[in-house]
Length: 172
Image (tube, rainbow, N blue to C red; front, top):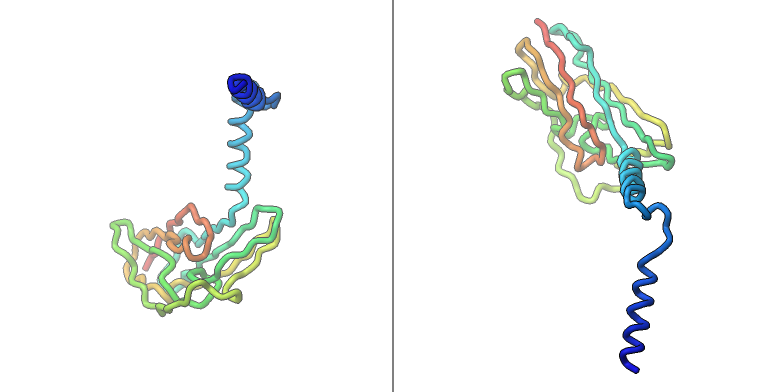
C-alpha cells in the first residue's frame, strides 16, 4: 500500500513538471522571454546625459547641461543630492586632464542625513526629461589649457545611470 502511494505521488509530481507551456517546449523561447524582461527592466531605469561645447575658451562659461530621462511608463523620482539640480554641495563630477591630473574641487562639501528626506527627490513624468545647466567653473578649478574628461560619480546617491563621460578642450 505504501508503494502505491509513493508511486502515485511520484507520478503526480512527474506529470506536474511536464507542463504544456509552448514557450518552453524547445527551450529557446523562455530564454528570449527572460532576456526581453531583463531588457525591459533595464530600459526603465532613469538615466542622465551630460553635454558641453567641445571647445571652450578661457573666460567663457564652462556650462554643463545635465539631462535626466525617464523611459518608463510610470513616474519615477531621483535624489537631487549630488546632481546639478541643487547648488554645488558635493564633488559629483570627476574632471581630469588628458594626463590624468584631476581638476581641484573648490565647492562646498555638505554632510547629509540618511536616508534623504522626501523633499530631496524630483519626479519625472513617464517618457519625459528634465534638464539643467550649471557653470562648473564655480566649483572646479581649471587653470591650464588642455583636453578634459568629465564623468559623473554619484550614481549610488542619485539613482541615475550616467554611462558616458564627455570630453572638451579648454583653450587660453
